[in-house]
Image (cartoon, rainbow, N blue to C red; front, side, top):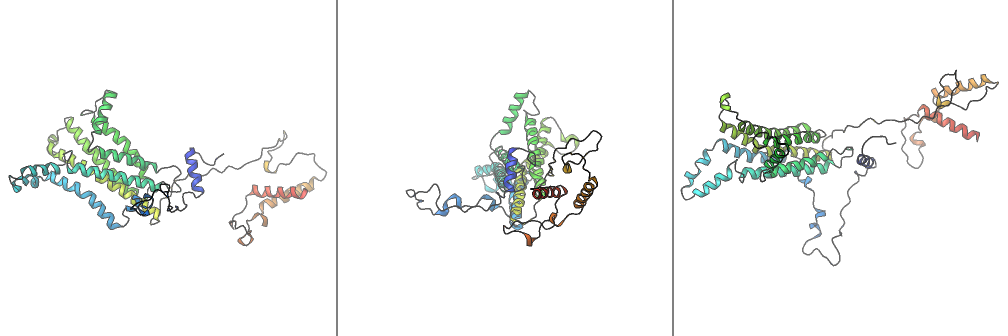
Length: 402
């Protein structure tokens, strides 16, 4: 009977980790691969050009603080500039007058390129690039965490699913995935949840990303920073969708003295533009913390392990007389008629009990000087249990009788 409960895959991962399979150093790629042969030469390329000699994307993750802060600034700066142009449109409005009548078409193209609402503008391109970068960082985090020795439950798989969801979020900037899903759910259920089924798309995304993010973030060492950035990404997208759904449902912010509708539309566009940057920063923080754990720069968070169930094998109890008390099964001997020397038998039983309470020199593990030449490492302070001492004495008596 196994000492733990779980699936067969978890059993294999636990046994491989116990055998030290994942901790073995990686072998260097051989010079001659299966794609090479005496007839097929690499041509003008050296052997270092083969993919086996190139480093993985995880080596490109910034570890030091200065490059890490520079990466965060580079991710936040483009959507911040585009959002500032949305709230302060004076530079774009004065662009045709500054360029003149000759460059009128050029100024119109630049305005379309810098518009946050443009589906083919710079904002959509930055959002797509940020989401794809976040998906790549999540995949790198999965590839590093899958080699953790104490991850018997396979919690690294959450980062693979999160990478797939982030890649899908990036494709929504160029493909109408949201309207398609909303239309399918509306036709399947017959319920139109606000504005041509946009409520279905918002509900499905929130119900998928929220538990997936919790599953992925909780085992990390820097789970607070990662969780805050990823939650900011999800919250900004939900707030943007909520503003759009509320205004489409007839919500008038003028009645609450919260500004006009155009102001809230600009706020929703700003939040939607910042969402990919928040997601990319969250996955960057997670991948950086995982790589630092793998390099031994920080103390990793210990994984939760279930207490092992110690199963002690007990021999079957012997049949006791009708008016007799319960007999200890470990000391039960075959029943026989009482001999004339019952006093001697009682003295011998008292002596055995004294031996059980006071362990002899044979019951203590040998010292390092007494270890054999095989190099077996036995703990000096380990003492045998009471059941083991009884079993050893019983074996010794049998050997003497033989």
